[in-house]
Length: 190
Image (tube, rainbow, N blue to C red):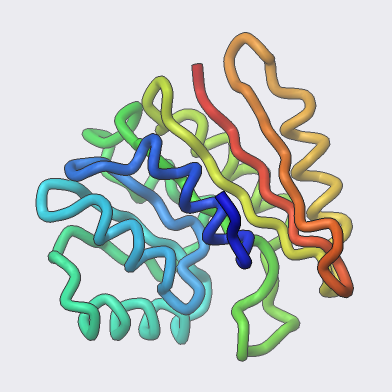
């Protein structure tokens, strides 16, 4: 498959675990595109939980979901992704099919508000706890902002240390992109 966009490539991989009735988490709602995608894939029988620390992002996501006439299968949290374990109802723990992260900043907004290693690493650990067996985490890492290279290194170090018998990690990146490469990590829980 040839794709001109690394996120299109990511979505082609995620089709393995996204199906009607699935449970999905958008850990960084941003402009809402991934939340809409997850809502569409989950359908009326599924559930989507989306997180963002910026009220603007939550409102943009809500507006985009409504404009796209998505089923009312979503819950938006104006909260950091590091709180997902306490905010996602326990009935969904161990049943989540996909968690998506886009690390960096909200495009078109204040570039000083960024994801940070300490909260992202907690969110990754919590994501593994709420995932179902065979489910995936997809992490898109944009490192071209202050602190981005440190978060990139911290996330990759964390993933490298995960037990191979518990989680498989695959890395993919767009090497020839001008500026900083966009890196994708796919984690599958065994």
